[in-house]
Amino acid sequence: MTNLPLAHQRLAATFFDIGVVKFGEFRLKLHEEHPDAPLSPIYLNLRTADNLEQGLLTSSVIASVGRMLYEMAGELSLDYSCVAGVPRAGNLFARAFSEASPGQPVPLLRLEKTEKDGLRRVTRLVGGEYSPGERVLVIDDCITMGESKLEGIQVLERAGLVVNDVLIIVDREGGGDRELEKAGYRLHAMFTLSALLEFYLESGRICQDRYEEVRTYLAANS
Image (tube, rainbow, N blue to C red; front, top):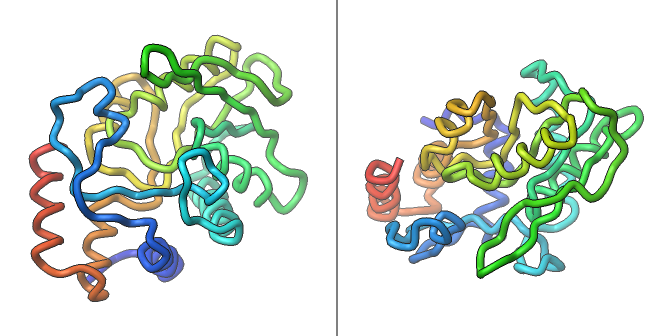
């Protein structure tokens, strides 16, 4: 049986039911650096309809995610004074996190991603007020190998900020947690992809064959 808390089960069900979770053959960001990597049989589009890469999330779902991430940071006693999202998808959730604070919004920093030679990189800190030495909580939607998170962290650290923790919605279990740990950062995920799969199987949203297909992919690429 799934061990997801009830609120997480409801959010996971919403993701599936509105079409955020897709099955097929997908290229991920990791394929920019590793074009020969196997295509993923599952993809999570955690974006809104007005995003350049259109998604299906509504503002109310994003606000719910922001509240859950904010509560999660409190439960984990994470130490931060401001928050930054990894662009582009992470910006939405960082803003929702900031606005979930019951007092003043958590100060929000904005990173920018630029494209060169077909590759997208987090390159600049372009918004927000901060002082050197402040601790920043980094937020993103998913993690596979961790490259974009490390890019964002490096930009923040060059500005004199301190990063200890990265908070995400889904860990795709591609080794990103180990990459961050190796670099000295802690990853905290609301869901693992395995936990989502278990819930979708148990709730009848996917069949056993689909479950086994994705589990086989994870086992070979974790």
